[in-house]
Image 1 (cartoon, rainbow, N blue to C red):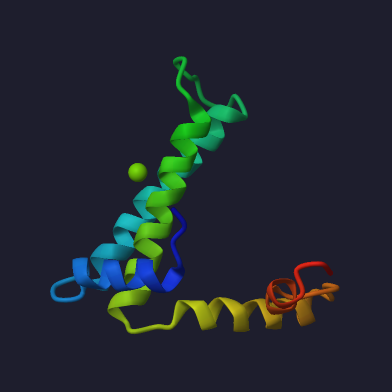
Image 2: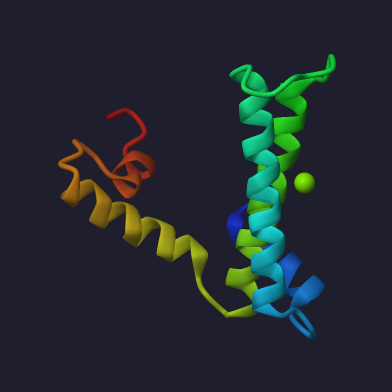
Length: 110
Ligand SMILES: [Mg+2]
């Protein structure tokens, strides 16, 4: 099953829209980023690991990061889809990239 940003945002708005508080969601986001850092440290041997499946754990923590990132956008009525495309366009110009996300999606063969 594939999901879109819009679907995820609508789902998370239902979950947090009535009562979600952006500072609390942001604190959860930072916590999850810390969990990603812990796994990356284990993968680069900066921290001991105990036979864990680090790729699965990394996937789970990245999903948590996306969850809270999209939740903050949802409760603030931000069109994250458009924000990502516009921000990428600016970055492509700033960093002199050959193509931007919109070009990539529009012309998948470039
Ligand atoms: Mg987590």
